[in-house]
Image 1 (cartoon, rainbow over the protein chains, first blue to last red):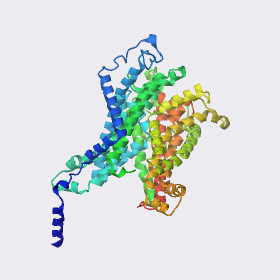
Image 2: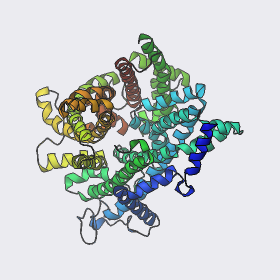
Image 3: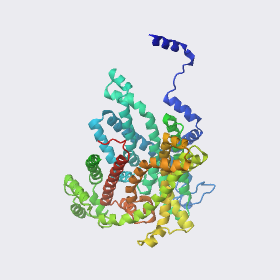
Length: 304
Length: 311
């Protein structure tokens, strides 16, 4: 009784206006990101790329990217063509700008597919455990053991070349890391009180997995998405070098870079430079933003 | 320990089954008619049928799968469609050139990244740490293909320091061709490795034993090199062991670009020529290698760290 009275006393001593509502993970992360200068600059760069891709896709910016003029092939940068022209006399700057669209498509769909497959398999394995878990672990160990690049190559042989295949091949081969993370997160979460609470209120398995536990893993999906985005954009370049890139004629940074294999020896440096510079700023911005995002979302990392 | 090792060995069987199944499904079932690829574009139907019989592709799928398994267990993968050489010979010939590029590059990279990682973890958040981190991140943001192409252009074409490409079988003359590929490979790996080691050392440097060592009055040098480094050895050795398969299989990009007759160059050549038997063999062998070294690193981990329960 005495303890109870003491508690009531202390509770009444706290003024109502001093009790602050706790900030949610997302509000807190957002406020942290806004204070982070590097993150804000990266964000502006990412928005710039999105806008550029949007304008290019609508053919408002650089509509001359496919204009062939053989009389001005391989011209060095000039006032007419700021980054010179390529083998068909097309404007290199316009090609590089339109390459943003291709890269964003590959990065976005490749990463989204990975996250989707990884989340689905990881959540099922982590939640149900037992036989389901054994099967999923077997499957991802198998996929993970086969070298990534050979798996993508094999997939491209099966599905033919092109933009769609690139997205599919990258997406279906790079989900393992996210699957692992989600699986262990679900194993941690499935016994927590809020899940038991949901069960007590009559929520079925699917409801608990998708409406209760899954939203608590969204921050992991966001972080892994940008990591996978960067690796998909980089994979496109290597696959183009291997001759498994996008269709001929589609502007892409990978194709521009691998064309430089033969161009550089002839002193044509502008195609390589333009594609590399475009890719460099985008990849760096996404990487830096992701680092800041991870710090903002993970309280354990703070102060390191 | 022995029980754990045996259990892990048994666990490898379903994975091996998975690897062979995925490879087989991709190349023999979904990959179209390999006989057409093998016979070339202008083959007559009779020629295709003959090659199909030769390659055993007229048998039922299940029998083809058994053939594939037999190839793996006997390490006899038949002949390349492109060079018509025995695949096992191609492998044996490729390992040497690959290793003479990857091993020096790997050792140089370790010699740079471990001391630098320690230093950065110690001076974390300082200007030095920030500057090097930004350089590393910027370096990683450039595609590896660019380093290879631009490296050759600048150092071989423009400065004439190294031969443009090629290879020598003799060890004394080989180095002339190997130096530039090794340098480029170091540049390609140094950024990611540095970030990894920095994180490993950061984990350790926040531990209590570091504070205790400091309060005992030990010098920073002793703390870093004796205490932090030896406690970080487990993740480092694990990473090193996991790197060994990639050292053996070489680097696809660099070897193909500089005309080095290693395994990476072989893989590139077989992709270029749709040489299915070689790609299939490389895929399965690399996967098995990776699996074996994964097991080794897990066993080592369990052996070094008594906290990991074995059951």
